[in-house]
Image 1 (cartoon, rainbow, N blue to C red):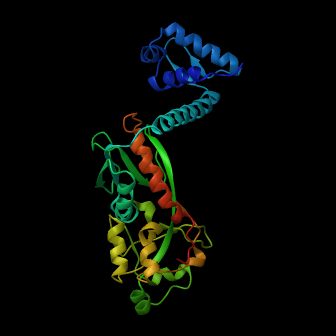
Image 2 (image 1 turned 90 degrees about the vertical axis):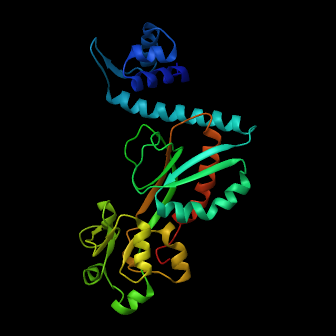
Image 3 (image 1 turned 60 degrees about the vertical axis):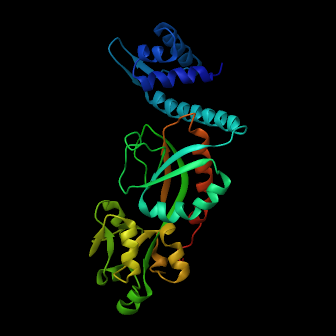
Length: 303
C-alpha cells in the first residue's frame, strides 16, 4: 500500500506542531486517531519515522528525509491547486515587495511599467532594505534575498542566479593599469563591503582555491554605493551581473580577470508566507520577475 496525501499532511503537522496532541487539535481529530495514522504510515513504509516516548519524540534519520520530501510534495500540491483556481481569477490587490536597494533598482524598477500593463489591478508597494527583515513586522508579502538562503520557516522559491563580475571603470584602468592575474590585485585599490564579509570573497581561481579574500581600501554597506564608487573610478569591485550589465554594455565599466573567474553565481530567492488570498498576485509577480532574471544566469564573464 502507498502513503496517502492525508497521511503526509498529518505526519508533517505533527512535526511542525511538536506533539501529537497539538497536531490533533490543528487537524480536528483525536490524539489517538492521529497516532493511528502515524502508525499506519510507518507500517506502509516499513520503517520508523518518529521515535516516541511518553515524554518526547524525535525524528529518525529516515523520518528527517521523509519529512523534507513530504513537505515539498504538499507544497507542490498546494501550488498546483492555487494555480488551477487562479486560472479563473483576475489578480488584484496590494502586493508589498522588499529587496536590497541594488536588486530593486536594477532588477525590479526597470520592469514595473510592463508588469503594471499585464496586471493593472495589482497595486505594487516597493520597499528597500539591505538587511534581512521580518516579513510580518515589516508588513511584507515577498522578500527577495541574494545569496545562500538560511534555514527558514518561510516558503522559498528560486528565481535564478546571477554571476559575480570583477569590474572597474575605463578611467581607473587607464590610470592604474589592468591586473593581468589575481596576485596583481594587491597593487590596486579594492572596493568592498563593510557588513557581509562573505561578499569580500571574490570568485577568482588561484593556486590555493577559487575564492580570493580581499581587504577593501574603501568599504560600503550597500552594493549600489560600491557600484557608484567603481563608476567614479575609485577602484576595482566585485558586483552582481544584474547590477552591472547595463554599465558593461555601455562601456562605463569593464570586466577584468575574466579568465580567472570561477563561475560562481549568487542564488536569488523569494521568500514569503503562504496565504491563499495573496497566492495569485505572489504567483504572478514571481513568474514575471523570474523570466526577466533568466538572462543574468547565462551571462558570460567577458561582459
